[in-house]
Amino acid sequence: MKNQWFISIKKNNGDIFDISDLQHNYPPEGKYWADPFLYQHNGIDYIFYELYDYEKGVIAYSVINDDMTFTEPTIVLERPYHLSYPHLFEDNGELYMIPETGSVNCIELYKCISFPNEWKFEKQLLNNVNTADNNIFVQDNRYWMFTTTQPSLKHQLLVLTSESLHGPWDIVINQHVEHSRSAGKIFRYDDKLYRSVQNGKGGYGTGIHFKSTILDLENSIYDENIEHSIEAMWHPEIFGTHHFDFNDKYIVIDGKRKVQ
Image 1: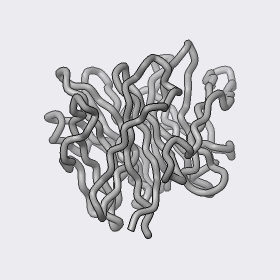
Image 2 (image 1 turned 90 degrees about the vertical axis):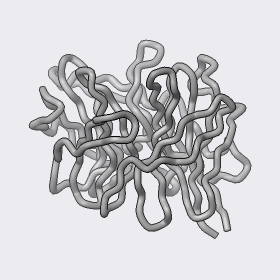
Image 3 (image 1 turned 180 degrees about the vertical axis):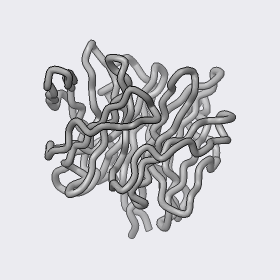
Image 4 (image 1 turned 90 degrees about the horizontal axis):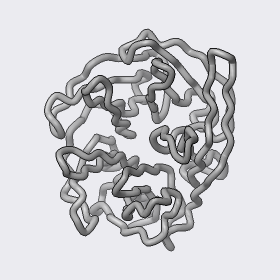
């Protein structure tokens, strides 16, 4: 038996924490799909994700059909090393991706040259550091990067800031914080800033927490509190869930099950 990650989807009814009535999309035998990120372009809904063949991960996308099935995966980023967690974000009219590249101890930035298929390596933002599931967002005219690092990729929170996407990046937090590994983008909802994080207790990928976050590091203020959670109970076969994303149209989440 193998662990297989798959992606489930539903229409966004306005309550992003409501994951009832999910439709499940399963990868073929010998593959898994995880870490889904949604993106809309010219009226078409795309989903980018890690495609893994049990040897190495690559970044792929599918188009979301009207019936919420996915088109066949198209691989857009492949390296000699493992890639996952294709964090997408826009900056100054350009689309960027930061996939996880922790296996080679660096954080890489890629720029979209021709959507959705052409991505160009832009810069190594950090090196000589083992991190997992990196997120970038902008607040107070500064760039903020949230990630985790050793000695515990689940609980060692690493926060960096920069005046430019391309750096240099300065560390402002590097400390043990329970449940720190990212489980999706940082977002605003109901006038709060939320971090989606993995439940770091009881094994890998056992659930998702949504932490309301107060970030005012100029005044040495950083605080976060778990306000919502999703446990690995939304599918009869799963024993793991560790990534969540949404936009105005869809909600997506991944799940882990056992297959032959």
